[in-house]
Image (tube, rainbow, N blue to C red):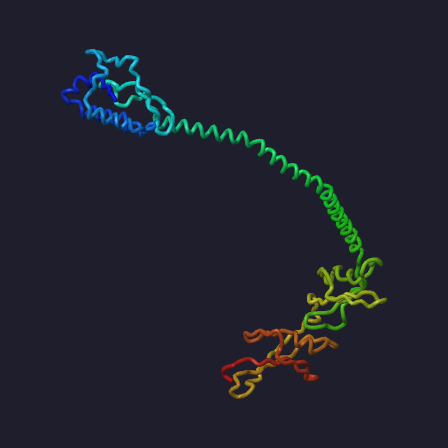
Length: 338
């Protein structure tokens, strides 16, 4: 094995002044830089680097003339060593001179360049895959759209029939509603009159017969849906509809407004003292006023309110009929003096 040294290094090699520098340079070029470059590392590289440091120059090494820095002749061109992970991308034909940079940038492949190449390769691979897969994707999309269209075409007539049926039913309901409104507009109450006697305090019963009802229409329904006007107030429907057969359908209303003859009241409250010693209750009595002959005194008295001595009562506690003295209401109120 022979080694070739740069002429500049050979001039100082015998004195040993540049031996450590050349050892560092050789180790960098042969061992350290290949570790970061895309080439295969052989044991010969390490041996060559160490040999350059330990062995003296051999007789068959090339020696340049004084002042010549052009390098070795073309015949001296060692075969480039392959990369340790791939094919050879470039190598030095000879060791550079001492004036050359330690890491030639022109022929040394850099890591970013390798990453760019790998990135371009991945992009090309992805694009190729998409191009190859696009027909399959389009085929599946076409099949899905075709199935959806077929299902819609099959269900389309049925959907149209259902829509037309719903529209027709809605139109028929509207027409029936208009027809019934016209029929209801013809209903009338015949002979609206109130009872002779009051039903309760401020309330009188009124009755009337529903008239002008067609045969195909239910008269009880007509009674419940027809309003009436009594004492200038519109009442939307009766309180009760009574079917009397051939006598027709009678509506009943309980009118509690504008009935002055039914407005009974209590007046002249009398204090009758304590009900008993220690009972804590006091007895109050009052006569029922405006009671009409024939009215039910119990119903009228029990529904007549009273207000006295800061107390309000919806009805008396007890109603008494004292004959010629009339109808009296009786209350027992709490009193601490008793």
